[in-house]
Picture 1 (cartoon, rainbow, N blue to C red):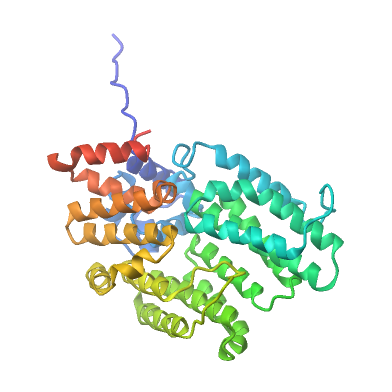
Picture 2: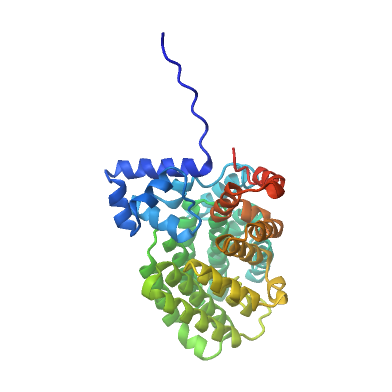
Amino acid sequence: MPQHRPPRSIPTEAEAIGERVRDARLRLGLTQADLAAELRRTQGWVSKVERGRQELDRTSVINELAAALHVHPNDLIERPYPTAADGVEWQRSASAVMREMRRYDLAPVFDGSPRPAAALWRETAALHRLRDNAANTKILQLLPDLLREARALAEAGTGHEREEAFGVYAVACKFAHTAAHALGHPELIAMACERAAWAARLSGDELLPAVADWMRVWDMWATADWGDSLALSDKALRGVEPLYRRGDAAAVRVWGSLHLRAAVSAARAGGIREAEARHRIEQAAEAAGRLPGLGFDRHSLTFSAGNVRIHAVNVELEMAQHDAALRLHQQLPSSVITALPRSRRGHYRLDLSRAYLWSGDRDRALSELEAAERTAPQLIRNHPIARATLRRIRSAERTGVRERLRLMSARFHLDE
């Protein structure tokens, strides 16, 4: 009689990630020992990853593993998550944004006369508020019209008005870039970065090329190119420095933002770069101390003294110094956190959840993860590190938190 094998159970998310790691490794003809040597880890660690027994709960680890396997990080974690961000509706908006960006050098299709640049800049202020509230799907819905109109103004305008139109176009690309990173759309990420750099060069804005480099640094993290990301940050800083030294308000914000990017790059590089990571935080803090009041931030950067302080916590976590991260948190007045936009507060609460989890306080870790989700639900439910953190908490669940975890897992669609 034929033997009947029991049906194979559906793998958990961690097990599915492990299977993709294993498949990618075998395609390259690598043994577990080969991959471990490339990553400076043990064969046992690789084995646990492939069996879904080792959570990839640090961005740098996911990116380094993907780089070693010559795949995009999203290919390992299967992102974008089909059920995590308003179904797949946002992908339709992303396609419309990409359609506009693809025809960047063609005559724009626009009925009537475009509005003046000042009116278009006011549209970017509305996008800034949406970004602060982590409303990324709404941002993508609004961008095609803004890109189209900015391009029409650049075609019809002359002189300063034409340059301002290209400035609006570049900043619109920056919003697309941020939303694409949050939702997990690598093709839009790459295209938005390229188009932002193109428009920045035509904008007449001395600082916009550095903002485009700030975007590129973020993209370099996906391939774990920590050294290149630091070199690019420094190149951009050299271009900004003359205006920064003169105390130009917008330059101070760009300068500080670039140092925060560099701090994260150095922290993820680890080793001898750890001292540099803390030094970059100090440089950013110095810039924040020089920051004058700004009425309208045309580059839409969220640089502030509070943002520097939460980056300091994140940098310690990136270097696996969770005790140091929690000490910095304890020194941080609650008013500093509440003054931050929702998107930054959501990220910060996620960082605290990881820190408490690593210190063994699972109840506090769950509470912080719940707070992160309440603050920026779309952002957190669609964040790979948030999902990995929830999986780790859930793997050690106790009766007292089982129902909370079940409900949260349902909101994250973790078992689908």
